[in-house]
Length: 625
Image (cartoon, rainbow, N blue to C red; front, side, top):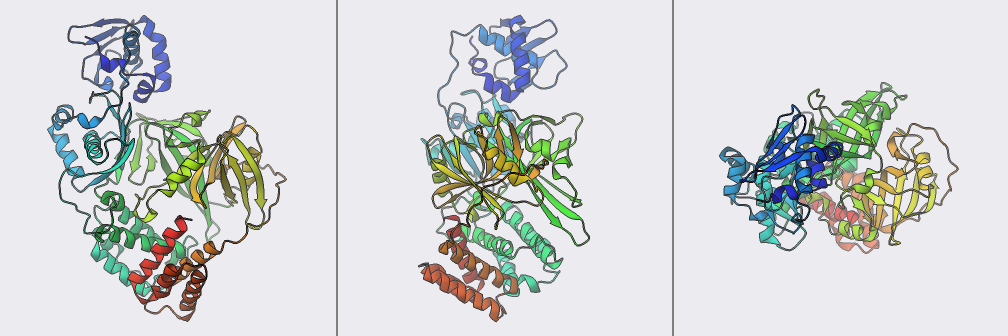
């Protein structure tokens, strides 16, 4: 009996089940393993210090080995490699297949009845998932990913979470994808075994309270507004809950006269809460309800072993009245198996002399984590793809040198064709109806050549033309950050390095062209995390003239600012100054030919509905530029 499942465990699969170093050690041991195969297909491997038993239908991590090592050990991997060495004439299966073929009976055999009941409960309110087809299909769920490693064998599934119920959700997602589009390589679907949809009625009672907030105005809102009651009204709806929490923070910042308050940010959060409710209650939208509302999304999921790669960081420093400085750091870590970017957030209070890169987080520092390989078994991931690393002696976190691992990132993260990726950005739904995840568009751009590198002193901004292998250009934009005074000089130094290979950062689309705001850059001479630079190099930067004004941008920006002022002062009594700003913004939009938006802005003071209409029009227009 030939074990096709063992033959299908190629090096990449074995590395995902163990580690690259362990597979390397096992390959050296494989030549000394004595392999025997029983009539029922059970493979036994014997070495000098251990005996491994690999029964059919049992995942590698659940097989037995007489050594004391937990999980997948080098003896198990060496036995697999030794078995494969004796069957080289028999090629491993590599055909494209679909996990939708698995039945619920097979799921029950693998997971048990209790787990299956729990999986149905998880999916009862609806879950959004992305199915990626191919020889090694995988499913992206809201808080984890599930990969099917061996064709037609349900036992060999791997997930970056410890919850086995996700395997059933992944199979159900594959079935939904087969019904929706059986041929596409990537399909976004809704998993809902039951017909009931808890989120399809939205949250009308919460919207009524938001109407009151908008009429009253943020500046007149008292401390007893009742945020906790509103949060209870959004129970089970993760994305609106997150938006409400952010809105409450903005209102609290204003009441405390804190520098983090932003009128435009507050108005944007208000409009988002309205827009998500409208998207599921209008009856005309084809948006996937779990994408819009985050129904039944777990707030936190315990992760199995994660292999992460640092893509830089963002650090914001906010001075306080007492002379201290509040720091907010976000480290971007790419998960190699799923191709998703997770965010490790850290907040602390320091002084103006604090060096952010030296701040300790978990078992390392921000500077080390931002540019490293991280292997951990003690992580928790939130629905928003926020990561928490716990201190653990049993499951420690290893922080290793970065090397050139960016070149091995999955195609979903590594951008080699700027024009094609810009087209994908243009096809995205509006931000208000997409899942509310952090670092959604952080990517690594492959750089074939760097064009003009220019510093704009008035804006304290560095811009550079990046060129891909196809000759298409992207614009890199890097603004001065007081938390990293030497950041621009370090970025300019690497941009002038002819060997520069990769630039990581937040991507967007502007006038049909790709734009990236770098978080890190890599060349053979070294890597730089833009907001965590500690060296004090000063370069003679080429100065550039300010970019010419864009009338459309100015018109849209003035409209959004006028609407934000209305929300701040309140629609019931906005005052003549706010109304004058609305009239001026409406006239400017009309002069640019944006008559529908001009009319919407002019009517915004009349009611909450009109204000939301105008905000949605302008926000979508700004994103589509």
